[in-house]
Length: 110
Image 1 (tube, rainbow, N blue to C red):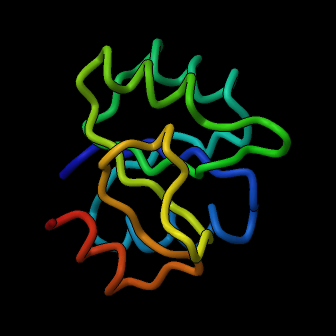
Image 2: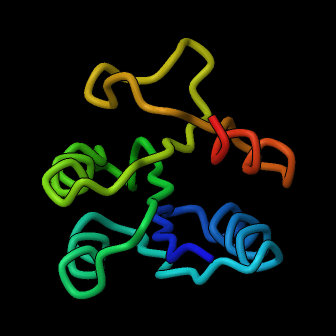
């Protein structure tokens, strides 16, 4: 199955997403709770897919998205925003928090 990077600063959300992905046979990298940890994982072991939170503490995930684009890693944004994704996320697939097995699978198949 796929090797999937989780970039998420909410430990409960990261744990739930990791459990869902592993239950479907995927290998999980991370979770990375900040941009520098996410970049380190991207450079060390490029994933097949990344789930990236829109904001990591006080940081946006823009630098992580740019690196994913450079490495041609598809991204699914995990967001709690009700008014749509921030502009820096572009036209990427997304999954709304809190995640469920069904929402994660739908986002991965979109």
